[in-house]
Structures are given as C-alpha cells and as structure tokens.
Image (spheres, rainbow, N blue to C red):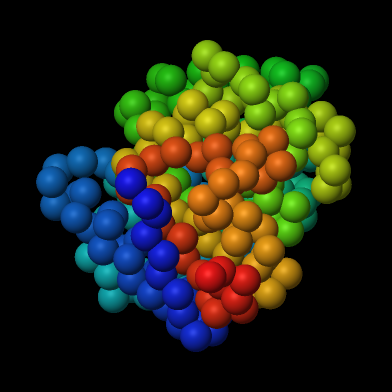
Length: 241
C-alpha cells in the first residue's frame, strides 16, 4: 500500500492539521477504552507541534494522564542536556498538560547508565514490559541525508534484528552516540507519521517516496507500515513529481 501524502501550504498549516489529527487519534483510542502509546520525535517542526498541542490541551477531551509517551530515538547525553528530545518535549508539552510522569518513558541518559548499549537494553526492556505491543502513533522525522530516528545511511544499525532498540555510534550528525528504535519495532506501530518541513528536506523526501531506491542510501525507506502518512509543507514536497 502506498503511503498517504498530506501536503500543506506552509508549516503553520501543517502543525495545525497534525495537532488536530493526533488529538483525534488519541481521543478515539481512549473512547475504545485503550491507553494509547505515542512515540514522539525531535526537530524544529516537532517543537512547534508540541507547543500547539499544549495550547489546545485545555479544550481537548484527551485524558493526558492516560497516555503513554515514548521516543523513536534519543541522544546519549546527560539528562539535562538541551540535545535531549525528551527535554524539549517536556518543556514544550508534557509538563504543561498533566501527563502522568510514570507514563513518560525516556531512554536512559549518559549520566544514568554507562553506555549507549546499556541505554538501548533498558529501553528495549521497558518497551517490552510496558509498551502494550504497539504504538498507536509513531512519529518520525527525516534528515536531509534521508535518515530517520537515528538510523543513518550506510550505518550498521540499519541491519539490527531481534531487537526493539539499538545503540548507535559514530553518528554523522552530532552528538555521536544515540539510541534508536529498530525497523522491526517501527513496523509494529498502528500508524507511522513522517513529518517534514522546509526545502532542506525536499530531496530526501523525494528519495524516500520514489518508486526505486535503497534503504542503505535513504533509511526512511526502510519503515514499512500499511498506515503510513507523510505530513509535508509545500517546501518539503517541492521535489516530488
């Protein structure tokens, strides 16, 4: 099944539509009696999304104390580092809407465990114990080089098998040490939402969505899910046919 494309005139419209869709998705899951699990991502456009979610929270019917939050990847740096995706999400969103701290599942930081391998093992175990088997929504970005989460072109982590999370070293984008979900873990999401904004992402988006191409060159091609949506502004979609 081909992924769905949702194109928006600009980043503001993209953020607004995406916030509405995520709130609707969480509300629907809770109406079914479920506790949805949502995996967040980092990046500039995502920070705008997080602030918009926090702004809309008082008017939403979402019970934020009954949502579990995870991350598709994390930088292996100290817990208070501004490089941490989790710190950005907490400050812009999670700490402002009444999320149960016990339902925020961060990747262990470098001042909490010794190595990125230890962090990946702990995150793997937490997902297996508390993850409920799947994400309601897995949010992912894409880099100008085609990477997604912390799976980079030509990197050995692309081939990780029988694991939920993997340590990543020598990342071409600093910081060098990270933890990422594997492709196998991503495939268990009910929905995968890629988010891209700006003309700097346009060529990578076009490669990811092309009829032909390799995962080694463009790792975003390796996420296979029947319910995949690409949320794009016109700048990010500008190299598509």
